[in-house]
Image (tube, rainbow, N blue to C red):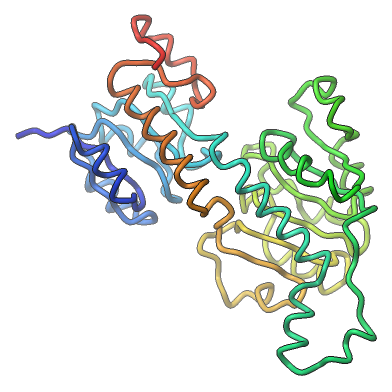
Length: 332
């Protein structure tokens, strides 16, 4: 029997497989093995769930001539070639709102860990260095200036979480109407000014041609001495790990907090991971039961809508213009 198939590039929970597998065969592949993905594609494949770093590009799409939907479980979609998908009238669905709170809370946790020097205090106590408390001090988040680069859903959620801390907030986002956010009690500035005035800079931009290596060797010098840099967006928004390590060693940065890396998984032998002022987690900001359930529920709903000939919610479609090719579809 020529069973229609969905390929998942990366694992799926059993309940998701069961839900999708009521009418389809679901095949889960290694999330970083491009050759395995290419070998699994044929004319039975009608959907691809892109969970890992393998780029769903023209080559992959051409090997699945009946492909009808590409799904992302998250807010980023840099692992999908949107121009190629749009050229074939394939909607790319994603889940931009489902993980907002989880990522914002993780960013705040990294900020607080860096400000309060949690690594320093924990290691000192484990090593029996009680007297360090007389020679070293933490910082306070209260009274600090926080720069939010990218004022989308997650950037705005971070701003809300910061309210009880009485911080000054600057935001850089040239793609929104700043007047719509006057009630947020923030100041908008360009990238250079945001970097130069902020004690803490937290990144919340998608990875695009404009944001690739947005933080680089040219503009990292604009940051205040011993300021803190947080990245829970995409690894390649920062030029490389060498840049951050050098900035820490030279005290141009007081601390860094990273959940994402240019290469994933990163090289654990890089000296950054042993630096006492580097706080690193393994792309886990949205890895909570609540966030994961929201992400997968949204992905399931929108994927099934497309496959049934219905309209997914436009805010969950990267390229909504392709939906115009099916005027009879109904919003579910």
